[in-house]
Length: 372
Image 1 (cartoon, rainbow, N blue to C red):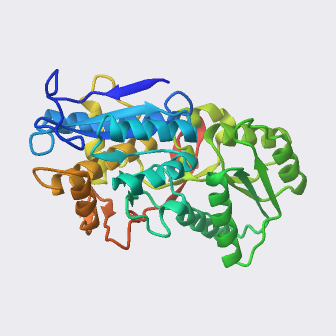
Image 2: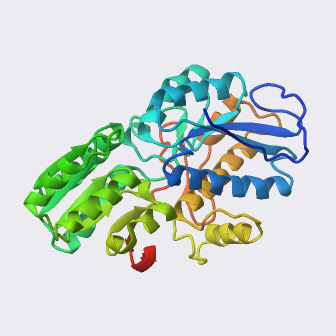
Image 3: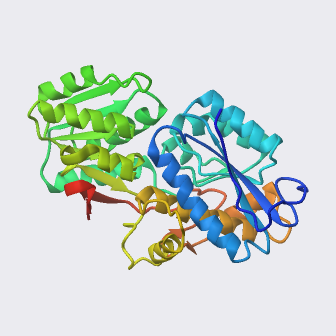
């Protein structure tokens, strides 16, 4: 198993930790994501590391550096669980942070209850993480249901009524499918076709045939970046030109670049501001930090989301007081109301862990450029 450890310490060697990831000079938080596969998870991580590195260079949190330990799970549920157990029992992580992929996040939910530890800013908009409220999951991004509602609103403005759905056959895809169907039903529409594919094989042939046959005006898509890109290319080869609309999980420079000319005109939902819009305070901060780095991450939506998530994590640690524990982190998050992370407002309570409600639709232009 590939192990990536992000050592962001103010000293070369940290002293032995006290308990729950807290030592006199450092605080440990843990993460399990896919690093070796899809690019988006890696960009999320690199964006977070950019902020933690900057923060540590400027004194950390109450004089303590934040150490992010990240393990690669390859989107395997079993591996994600093993990684999480190691983070909690061996690494003594104070909190879990920025997990990605709906199935792997859902796999570790029982561990959160067992260990009474917070999972902050998972990079998933699954409804299972929003409702019912999980006492230890604190979302940053809007839900896929919110994204689906914005998608169908955009279709209504264009008077598009013949809509097909492509969904991955797993927890993530089922969640997206449910959101699409609910939003379409609210506008008295029924999908003209629903097609699924296996996330393990990525065999899209049946999906392409089913959706290509009905020639829809638009396709709503809940798929991984590789599957989305492959499906678009195959539909284009059939000579069809529907409006493709995708959830925000595909956001990465690698994905947009992989599409080439076939990506022009596709719609992608966003849960963060445009990463080059310096009108937003957090984007100005993001760009300033990246400019000062020797090897900065890409200036992408995924990296920006990681950066903002790291700001949220650091603020929770700060509010947990001079002697933070797992329980104090949870209490601090539950007490957060209207926290401004630089133009992104986040608020929680014991009965509301939804975080930000920001959602917007963007269109991909030439060479992967984003139009808003």
